[in-house]
Image (cartoon, rainbow, N blue to C red; front, top):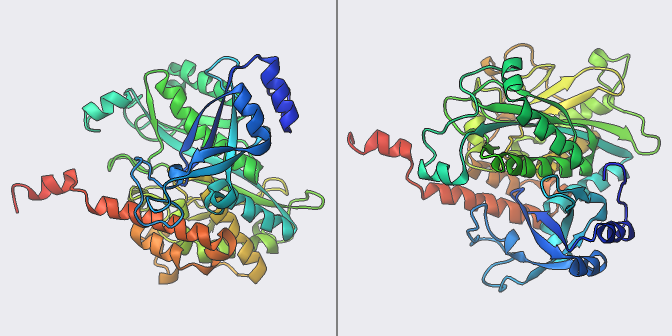
Length: 456
């Protein structure tokens, strides 16, 4: 399919008939970035290409463990959980690399559900960028840990004593990626087949941790590819008796896993890059400077979109390659915003606050919306950080939230979020994060048992 792009419903139907496909796999991403879907008969698929199909709206009314929210307005027992409308997107058609000639097509929630659909949320932000005269280019990079475990074994072990793919810390190891060359090549090939091409894949520092950098693409396509990569990377590993996790931080002994986003803007009329100015310091154009200023100012209030779980905040601690304040520095990986100088086509900002567990659509929406607001309001960034940002003190206004509950409250009150993402979306998503924090508050952890059971 890499040789033949599907652009419309007619081409999609022709492909299904050409392959004599009896079923097509379809799916849509929920608020947590989890792909929810099913196999659909070829006949049902053909009719759904024009009119869409119904999908029980509980998928927007439960959490990652399928537990029903008790605090959202959109759906619940009070609505009877009716169907939500989903439109199919032929241009997202892909080979299912592990299923022969089978194909997959992504959908997007429509109708009343469109207001809280993560993909639609990003689409609205990108439309606003275009109205301002900009196109967005983005590239995601993910760190993730791989284990010699199965979904059954991790539960039998109660997630303790897990065996990583390789022991110890050995970043950028050619030894390791040669020993596991078949695994690497298989993942690279899968990504090529599914139009999720990687520009880099290497060993990170930590037991069994890899880093994958997806090729840059337009904003919506880049988020589609990031979300699908996370899903099908896990599928690929489990099909081989392994497990990959994109938790923000799975162990107190290891660094967290980032989901960094590289961003730049182009002029919508001619595609010319706007972040580079050869005559400016570090090549930072005025547009880029204001974009960064907006990102920096609004990062604390939008943090729940980039750190959406309780576990996300285990990563945002000093000294573990993740930011603790909304800082900015030139080629400085201790900062939340890393300015990457280069020529017109490579000048960009790396949005490093996002964790691997973030929904790619929402993390990208936050990064873009805050930057666009910076351009609109001509917001100047704080002084660039030199050296170790962890060792410096910053104004309270730059401090990132320290918990999911705090982040949810700040998002709910954000006028910027309501303006760019929509009031209905902000209300719904903030409520889901409040639910998540409340679910954790009910738990008794292993740490508490070890600390208090005998001694207190």
